[in-house]
Each structure stands twice: as structure tokens, then as C-alpha cells.
Length: 159
Ligand SMILES: CC(C)(COP(=O)(O)OP(=O)(O)OC[C@H]1O[C@@H](n2cnc3c(N)ncnc32)[C@H](O)[C@@H]1OP(=O)(O)O)[C@@H](O)C(=O)NCCC(=O)NCCS
Image: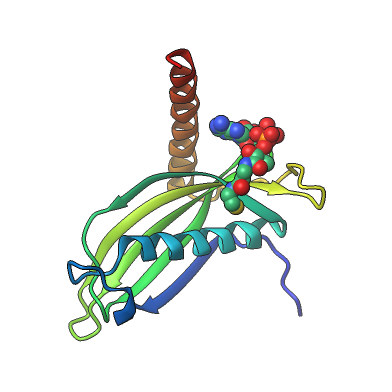
């Protein structure tokens, strides 16, 4: 039977290929950003079952370089929903397939707005908060959004 329930998590993994190596011998940061964008989009659209556009990409952090041949897993989840917007958090883990050692290499947040067929913002299904962890992450997202709006207002003042 078809399962149309709103899925709030998505996991994608791939082995890092040689052709994405940068001049320093690691995986190109731009490639990781490209995959992050795809994973976040898939997580947002699958959750809403609506086309979504990216409004913000926040706190992209490259904590450690990723090596060619490592298995990189992108763990995405919907962590916040507003009326028409939603935030996806992604944690990136790189695993050395020979040793099994895993490292947390990146984290970031993508904000999307769901659009209807006329490209107008449309309501997103409210996120079901079940755990203390989800509650904390939702609150953190609300704070991030507040800070972002404040920074934008301040920037307007100095223009
Ligand atoms: C996303 C877009 C449709 C929003 O248009 P808009 O006229 O600002 O729409 P609204 O005012 O109805 O806001 C929609 C949501 O975005 C949020 N938002 C919009 N601008 C914001 C800002 N500057 N800061 C924080 N949140 C913002 C609103 O709070 C609202 O969320 P909510 O409904 O959950 O409260 C428009 O900005 C757009 O088309 N951007 C380009 C997207 C794009 O091309 N992305 C790259 C390729 S996918």
C-alpha cells in the first residue's frame, strides 16, 4: 500500500569519488554543499508533498576535511515548521570503510518555503513533536529564525 504520511527524516549515503578531490587532496567543499542542497530539498519536499524553494542556508560548518573513498552519510530531518516555511537540519558523517571509524564532519540548516502551483507560499503540515530532543531542536530553530530576522533589520538600518 502507498504510504503518504509526512516523513520528517531522510538518510542518504555515498562514497566520495576521486573526481571531487580538491587541490589539497580532500573532497571539494562545493561538492558537499551541492549534495547537502539535494538532500535538504528531498527531505523538505517529501515531508510537505509540495514543491519547496530554499530561503536560507545557515550555519554551514566544515568541521573536518573528507577524504576520497570515505562513505559519507547525510542525516536530514525536519526540525521546525512555521506556517509556510520549514527548516531542515543535516548532520554529515564520514566513515573510513576499512577501519569503521566515523567522524562528524559537517552540520547545517536549510530553510525552505513550500509553494503551490501558482508559486505562492502554501501551508506546511505542522511538525509532530514527540521527543525532548525534537522539542529542544524546534526551540533552537525558533531562536535562529529570531536572530536572523533581527540581523536583517539591523543591516537595513545601516544601508
Ligand atoms: C521564498 C519566497 C517565495 C518567499 O516569498 P515571500 O513573499 O517572502 O513570502 P512570505 O512573506 O509569505 O513568507 C513566506 C515564509 O518565509 C518566511 N520569510 C520570508 N522572508 C523571510 C526573511 N527575510 N527572514 C525570515 N523568514 C522569512 C516568512 O516568515 C514565511 O514563513 P511562515 O509562513 O512559516 O511564517 C521568495 O522569497 C522567493 O521566491 N525566494 C527565492 C527562492 C529561490 O529562488 N531559492 C533558490 C532556488 S530553490
